[in-house]
Length: 310
Image 1 (cartoon, rainbow, N blue to C red):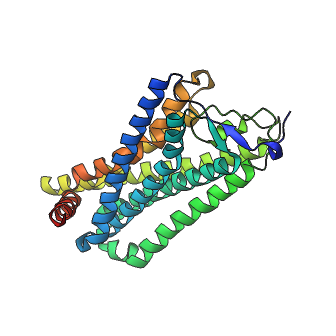
Image 2: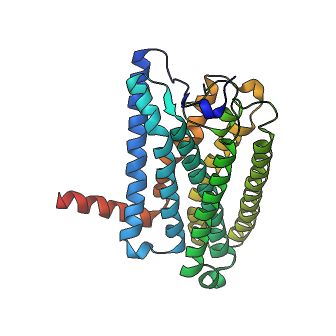
């Protein structure tokens, strides 16, 4: 029986047993991380430099790209390091930092997706009040609230999780430090406090989900009442990318955390974790860029300008 005070490191789940597969996973993660960094970096640069993109929708999109960058930079580099050097170790403080930042960015992303849904609702259902409800000060306050709530949420979970005594070794069944995996190492009964906090968190997340669903019901009802086909197409083109991103984020996260215990396995759990921790930051820039002509034009101007300078 070991206590958390005597644990100096954790052992992460290796992604492969053979050296060839480890190097393959390293190359795969390297390609994914570079693509995510490039895509989100281009969106951040295009929105920051394009004055015509200084609108609430693109302001929140910039913040979403920052959360995507943060979440993928929290989990992937350590997995790449371990695959390249055939290692499983992560220090106790490194594990705590990974939990904190991952929960921070994921929580902020859910809050931002909910705010972006509100932005779409106001622009389509209450267009005359758009400037009042989503002025520059209101947008700044909502973005700050999303980041602050993510910080407090993450601080609570991290402090509570790592205050629990760990009595079942230090091997985690995941390729990065994740709260459910750490709870499995906790002594019996001592983890119930964190389970209750997780239950409350699930209820809050479900509240965001209900708000998004209700908002989109109202949005689609309003869009279908638009007389012109061009107007309906424009409204759908602004909503569908956000709806696709929300669906990708929530479906993978819900499947990862709400799947039956009988479906858990050492091979399935890491694959599911990749879906919600790595795939959304990779696909979000592509989803938004494909449907938004203004963003595509700004990204193209930014890229061609950089090439010409080079």
